[in-house]
Image (cartoon, rainbow, N blue to C red; front, side):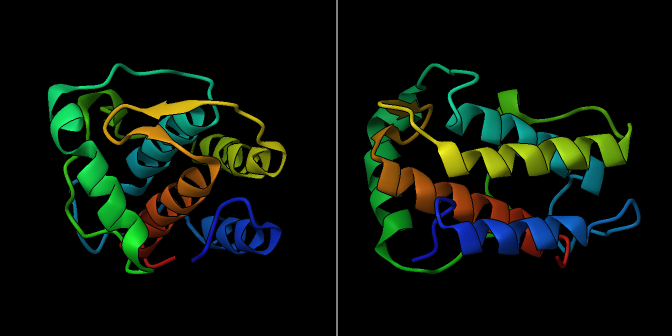
Length: 148
């Protein structure tokens, strides 16, 4: 399975991110391309340990089951999955190029990832292996959403 910790996978993702432009249209979902980039920045900051979020009740009940399903195969994440409110960006527009560059820099930071412990707000405690796959699948999901 592809992992964000692979240099070639990160390069592929960055090339796809670079193909996005302000006119990119979503195939599904409610976010525009700017909101999606801001959403992904928030997610990368979480995975990279820059921000932390408390676990929620649904995560305690179903998080491990969902994580195991995510890890089971290379199938992409499903369309129209719910988004936690902390990761929703209400800004409709902003400096697109600045935010896209910020996202790319965060993706590059996975190359030096060294967090010892990570607890996802929904999945719970995750290994580096699981983080690599989950982060890749999340980015891939949103790039596919915008035909990138």
